[in-house]
Amino acid sequence: MSRPNFPAEQASALHRLRLINTRNRLTHSLIQTMLAAQTAYLRSGQALALLPLTQAAIAARLRSESNLSVVADPGRISRLVRGLSIILPNGKAVRLSTLFPKPRQVHCQFVDHVIKVEKTWMAAGGLREPLSDKAIAEILGREYGVRLLRRTVANIRHDLAIPDCRSRSQRLNYLAATEGFSALVPLTPQTLRAVVPADPGVYEIRASLASPLGGERQEWPGERVSTVSHSVVYIGSAGDLRKRLGDHLRGSSDNAVLYRHIADGAARVRFRLISDGWRLVERELYRVFCETFGAPPPCNRMSP
Image (tube, rainbow, N blue to C red; front, side, top):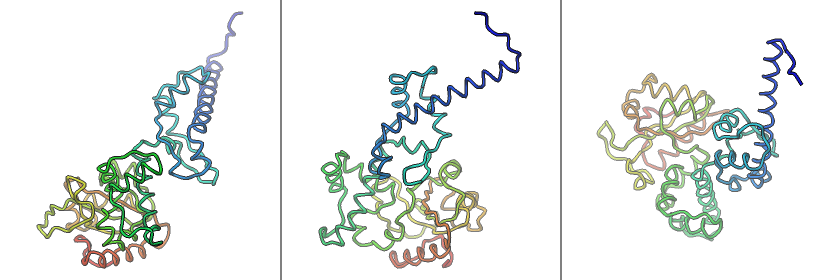
């Protein structure tokens, strides 16, 4: 049978429709495969049920199990995942990339969970003092089948800005006040664009303890975990976190002392989104910090 002689515009439209149809079939197969791989998480909504998963593994599964007219290579899957979101059974919309956590992200969830449960055990009298990193690793292996070295637990705890067991027993006030903060991330333009939202909230900036001001070294939980110790140098709030942190990074926030601390590019930041009353939350966080450590952060020139 001879091929119809379509006009150029019709042929172009038909080609586009075929591409759209191919993308739709690939999207459908991808979602079906993700539903099977992350069933426990999608049904429960519990972060601990999320399994480590790579886009390469899903691409390999699609190639072996799906009858697709297009090769499901990792690059194509990556481009597709970036533009998709799903709605969980609880009504919450999340990016599809959420279902592709790295093992480190999953381990962070488990360490964070055990330390949060630690508070309940201590309140109930079942635990006399906070858990050591070794004890956390043993609980993860025994109760959840997650095998981590003590050193790995310590590194994860540091990334989550959680003090060591000795400091948690002495400085619970500020730790409780900062519950719900994000993990520490580098204070760089790239991180601001990729991680920090343009939403209201409170934030905490940490910088190297080798202060350019030559002041006394401020102790901070978890110093022995990292080769470069960091200390809280500033607590603030803003209606647009990304813009405010960008101002600090460029030195245009009218705080020369803070800029000298973060100008070397080694500063880190964590934040918590607050939809309303973020200035009140900042004021309370500042108060608790002063009560816990006996002095305000060195770059907070006045009480908020």
